[in-house]
Image (cartoon, rainbow, N blue to C red; front, side, top):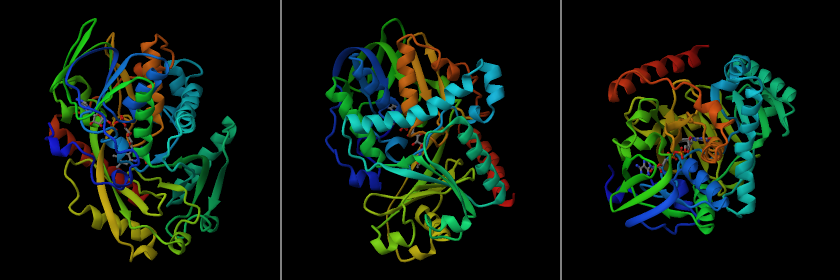
Length: 438
Ligand SMILES: Cc1cc2nc3c(=O)[nH]c(=O)nc-3n(C[C@H](O)[C@H](O)[C@H](O)COP(=O)(O)OP(=O)(O)OC[C@H]3O[C@@H](n4cnc5c(N)ncnc54)[C@H](O)[C@@H]3O)c2cc1C
């Protein structure tokens, strides 16, 4: 468990530029509620806001600060899609879950993005939202995959503008020779993600949700009324949502050990430069779209509202931090933009994401009234919003969409603790090697 001084936000660009720094209280004493949520990341907060909008009685417990985990540390890239690799095999997915399932997943992939858009508008959340996204290719094989994807989106009648861009065309977006082309998508974008999650928490609170920070849920006793114990208090609830994702096991190892074996915590890192001048911006990313390459251990980058280059990557599955995050990530950034050689690095940080074996988000139940959602495998800003909605639908007795994911079998990672982590690191090295040679 973390000691008190580690319960503040990590030293990220997001924490430094956060607009709403007003904390929520810590729970002491006893409260009774309809729904208790453990975990104040995007999944938990999204569900809390959905419940508060429905005038449900809800209590959210966050061990540290709202958005302290992956949700307040990520690349801020709003990427559509839901169901992970399920949507890569539409026929198999429809055969397993019934005709039309793949279409439902595709619609949910868009709904996650729309929830964010609607909330920013409805609750006037200031979080620097900017539309525009580029999937870029390093190799002809990746360019072929993007072209195939483009065709699929066109056939599905995707509502946003998408374009295939060749090497020369890409120069209008990115001043680099590193990529051979890409696909742009005006339906995806980027934002200040800690401001988003805090803004949503504030909106839920204003609608009556009780939110407690620096409140670790240490134990649960199941029953028709669930008892959730915290260090200085107790919550009694009819329903419980477990939304601790890759941090749940670290915060309270005994809380839900059944969930731990299905999720592998992997760390990804980001550096933020000093603010770039207008001239530098024009010389690196004049259109300021969010960018991802296509590798398993990918580079992802974008500019912040104050023109810092936020460059992420270095996914690490081996449970040990890379020796020098700044040095290694800076080297990667300079491979894309050598013209940033003089830009100072002002922030660096990392965060844990939950990886599932099959790269499909995990939703399900541990009991009739205990639900969970986790394991977005590095792609969660929009999908967490869809999960929040699905958890609430399930509580309300609507199961058709929740069950698509809940009926998927979760595959446990073999081994225990560090052995498990090391085995996976070896497996990931294979994919990194494959990306390097093919
Ligand atoms: C560096 C990095 C970059 C990423 N970039 C992107 C990106 O650009 N785009 C994208 O779509 N996705 C990205 N992701 C993934 C995305 O951030 C996650 O999928 C998403 O934030 C998961 O949200 P969550 O709410 O499920 O989990 P988290 O945000 O990790 O929240 C879990 C919360 O639960 C709390 N908690 C755990 N146990 C307890 C307990 N016992 N009691 C109380 N509280 C508890 C934790 O303190 C934590 O705040 C990235 C992730 C990382 C780490």
